[in-house]
Image (tube, rainbow, N blue to C red):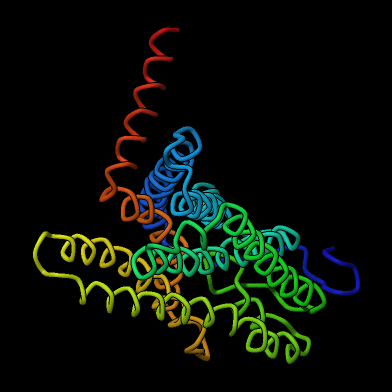
Length: 315
C-alpha cells in the first residue's frame, strides 16, 4: 500500500466542505458552475491572446500565463472535489493526494509569482514608459516566466518529496477538501520537524517575496498616478485599472496569509473558506477583472467568438 514501509495507508479521507448529503448536492452545483465559468473565461483569454497578433505584448503574454496557471490551479482542486461530491465518496488515493499536493503548490505559487511579474510590468509601463520597450523585451519576458516556473516547480517538488517520506499509520482523515501541507502533517505519525521547517524556510519566501514585489510596484504606480495632472481623465482611468488589479491581489494574498501565516491548532472552517477563495474564486474572477476593462481584450474576444461561431455555422 502506498510506498511500502513509508506508509500504512493506501488512501485518505477528505472531510470536504460538508458531510450532509443535501448540502453536498448544493455544493456540487455551485462549484460545477464556478469551475465551468473559470475554464471558459481563462481558455477564451488564452486563445484570444494567442490568435490576436496585436496582443503579442508583454502584458498579454503574462496574462496568458496567468490564465494557464489559473486553469491548472482550479483543475487540480475542483475536479476531484466535484467527483467526491457527486459520488459522495470522499476518498483520495495516497498517490493521488501527493499528486494533487504537487500541482496545487506548483500552480498556486505560479499565480503568486505572475501577479508580481504583472505588477512589475505595469510599473515599468507607467513609471518608466520611455524605457519600457527596451526593458521588457520578449526574451526577458520569456526568461521571467521560465524562472518563475522553475522556482515554483522546485518548491512544489521539495514539499511533495518530503511529504512522501512521512508515515501515516492512522486513519488518514484530512480535515479539508483537498490535500494541503498543513492538514496532511496533522495526520502523520512520524516526525514532521523537517517538513515544518521547510514550510518556513522555503515556503515563507515563496509567499512573501512576490507579495512584497507586488506591493512595492503598486506603491510606485500609485505615486506616479498621483503626480499626473487631474484633467484629461488619465488619472481616473489609471486608478480604475489599478484598483481592480489590487482587489485581486488583496483577495489572493489576504486569504493565503490568513491560512499559512496564522497557524491554528485545528484547521478551522474559516481557513477552509479562505482556501476556497484563493483556489476557486480568484481563478474565476481573474479573467473578468483583467480583461473586461480592456478594450483591446474585448475586441480580441469578440473576434475569437465570431470566428468560432462562423466556423460552426459553416459546417
